[in-house]
Length: 153
Image (tube, rainbow, N blue to C red; front, side):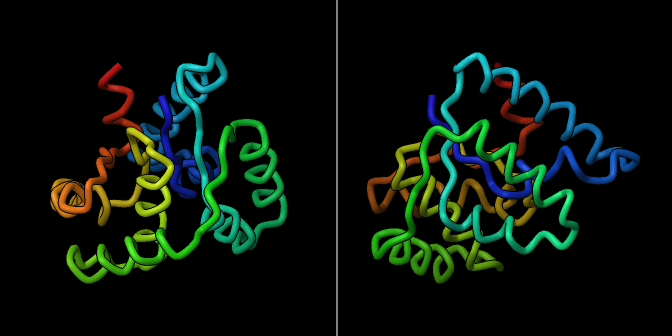
């Protein structure tokens, strides 16, 4: 099964473990990485993920995240006209706050992923609305927090 990982999911294991929510997400993501290593999931990322990783200020964290991406990625989506068109539609219709998030969703749907896994509250709050809008364009995706994805197994 193909899943798209938002940058924040890949970075989460390197975040502050003392915060309860982050600690719970890290536990779920660790389990997710076990599934990935056993080939239960094929990981898709996009040019957007790689671009966002370059913005990580801490050089050690950036290098660790880059290594992790290399290890887990099965497919990389290049952002082209189709993804931009979908992202524009989503930002307009679904009021996604961050255009990069709209590009993540667009990349996930054009790669035919079943899930977009994200720690982004704006995306998960709007997941049903985004899903309904995408269905109008013949796309389908489930937007879930790692905790919700792991609950489904």
